[in-house]
Image: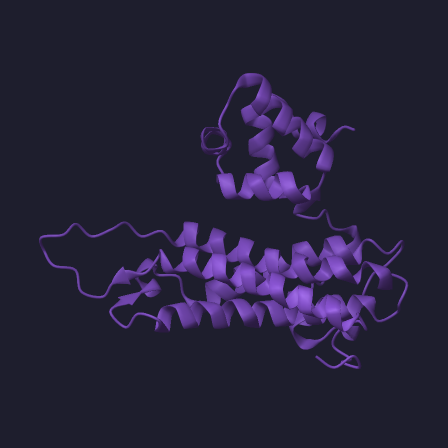
Length: 242
């Protein structure tokens, strides 16, 4: 990768190799998860037809996209004061969206006798869900710069399509919460009650994979955090208190 690539911050070449390795490992894990949604194009009458699971598939794709964005954007922190930082984040959203869509297509093409399309998730719905998830996650990085805010006119085409018209981005309540302390409270609750992660995830209306990510990064969608709080018998406000 060129050190003078205007699409990305000027990180050391070794760092870019580490990022590439992280993205590859994320691809490997999520391609396997996506492949699990493939259903045979021809199902004999003697075999029951599996259920449609478009919402589960969307959840996997959203998490795949946010994992990719996080793995690279975490390395941008030394450049928070650089005026190009917001544009780099927006362009990263573009690249992640393209990477996920390409991955889905390659998984689909990997077995001509089976298809992900069985679940009825059309391209338009997929793209819009991914744009929303990426926008929410990217805002967590844009807002790390005090008083920051990117004018829609200054954003690349994809970011313009995602950006809300009104109110301004910095006035919106992010759908994603960053709270390592809430993650620790959840862990303490599980340990005290002797509850397994899978059982707790079911009660909270999410997946154990999402909860493992929450414990590691402290990042969680606000709607999922509300389910976690309810499963713990508390409110989201109390869970977010330091």
